[in-house]
Image (cartoon, rainbow, N blue to C red; front, side):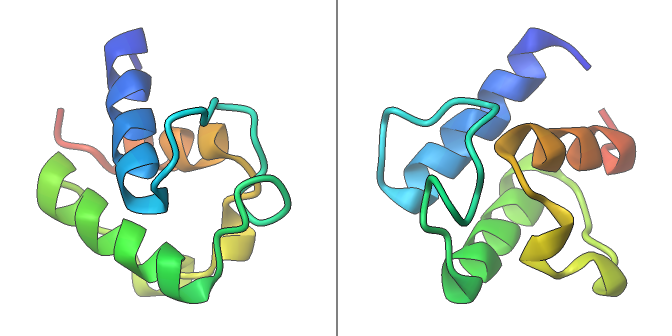
Length: 80
């Protein structure tokens, strides 16, 4: 996927998490302190704004160690 796609993912993560200093290789739980509730808010935001659908079996933050991993998943499920 394009750099613009990953920048869009970063923008959504930054908005939901409430931080502007987030980068692709930061760890979701350890670095960004994303808990399960924040993760679900992020999933809902991404599904709404990026036209993607998370499979039920993928709704576990452990599946996305870093923001980049989340971007890779979204790229594989995106209609874009």
